[in-house]
Image (cartoon, rainbow, N blue to C red; front, side, top):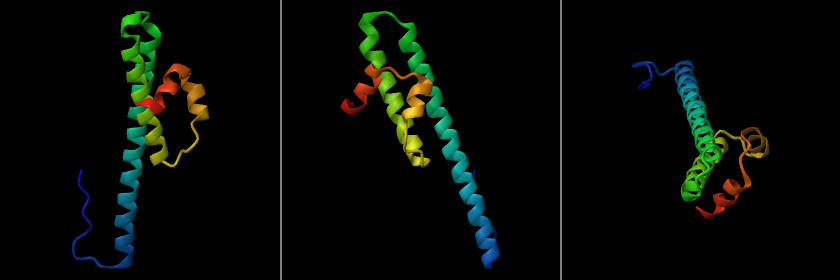
Length: 103
């Protein structure tokens, strides 16, 4: 969806309305991206917990760490700097958190 300012209007009110609409669209996209990243974290952690095969565990840990890392970055882009509550809520294993710095 493209957003264009109204043509021919140069008033401050019209400029402010266009900016508010753009700001609203940006916030909506940030929220949607955060939701998608959270869903990916849930999916990768579920695969990790449900799979007992040691041969693919390292791959599952790597996938989960990538998803958690991307989620943390998206949260920070939204202004959410503290991740303690999210770590508890998603029950992110220490094995995944350890890998965040080594990607």
